[in-house]
Image (tube, rainbow, N blue to C red; front, side):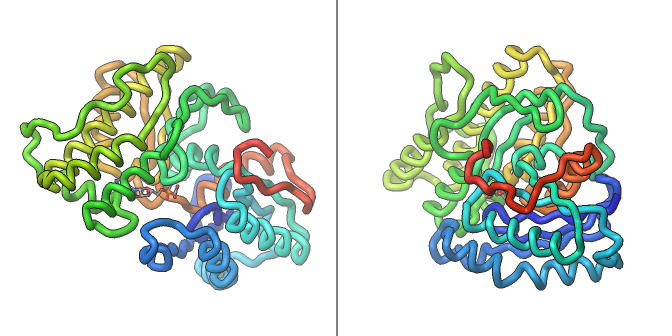
Length: 329
Ligand code: KG4
């Protein structure tokens, strides 16, 4: 099966052509970072206009690189939830046009679930049940994945996503936008024996959950008090990783499933990857996440991988499929 994937849920316009849900023939991604950087965050109106301007060019360059003709395609997979409504609509409308012109079936895809399919593009076999850990700019959550399209939320964030907290704190530290990689690089320069400048997050946790908004205020106060930026970046990273690990342990214990798949932009962070590996080794769990950092962040190849499963199970939609900012449609 040759499936064309479309991802436009936030600020990346991405198109991929994937064979049999496993082999990437081409993936082209335009990142709008430079357009949003002056605002230190994603501006929804700018995002949707930019998708509209770029998507045709991205499609043509992905098709050219793959060597595939539209008539060779088996179907289209498009992320239709969750995300910024205007951005999702651009990808959805593009999928509808291609479907009409080339008579191709469409599989609308849950962007969150697609992140858990990214490791399949590196040889991982998706065998349920699994625990899914998603840490990105828009989502921070843990799921029990029972089957295709059968995800139950075990832990969510009550406020910010971890990537958002990285970006806001990096911005306060003058590291630019999006600041995740820059904050990681600054933290790596810190001597790990220093006392942490920030208190632990969510000391009391009756239910497993994330909360990353309080640490932004703590970082702001520490900057005003003249804290050393390198130690502050290191403290931010340590305190947030601690919470991620604590929540994950709670979720694994409550579900009994010890196979974890992780994804989302923050999984590009080497310190987080290392700490998750360490925990999994110690506890005897299996953990998998994309080795390629480009497959951690938003991309259309993961959308095509999940879409291939849906299309091969004859799960296809009419042209009037919904687009939704939340996971439920
Ligand atoms: O999954 P993703 O591409 O899309 C959104 O949900 O927007 O994630 C982007 C997020 C941004 O917040 C970015 O700062 C964060 O992932 N990120 C990182 C790193 N690389 C990207 N956070 C921490 N460390 C990194 N190395």
